[in-house]
Length: 115
Image (cartoon, rainbow, N blue to C red; front, top):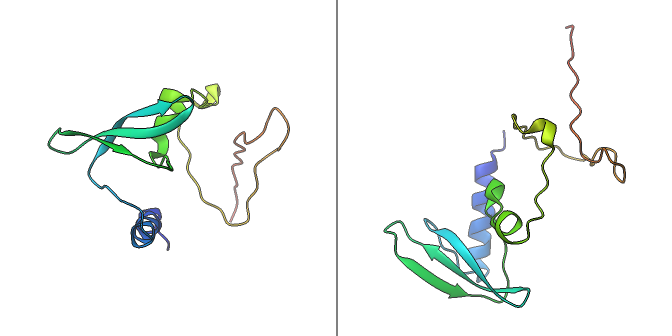
């Protein structure tokens, strides 16, 4: 069985050995922009110390929190009928359901019975 947390750790360690500056145990609270381009981030350490860091590239790895999409870009889209449930799945070779239609990526749930 493959575990998502192990994959995430593998990606993090690879990024670190490839020269990426990695900060663990911190929380990004704000992104600062120059025009439309993000240029620095404010983060808090576990001791509530606030620090500022500049960067050339930004990868939003905040997961479901989606810091950039929810706080700044305001482009997070939710399916209103599913606001009371969460489904997570990882599939090899899967494609988005009904691409290019108003049902794109809508969940499709089928109950199977029998043996």
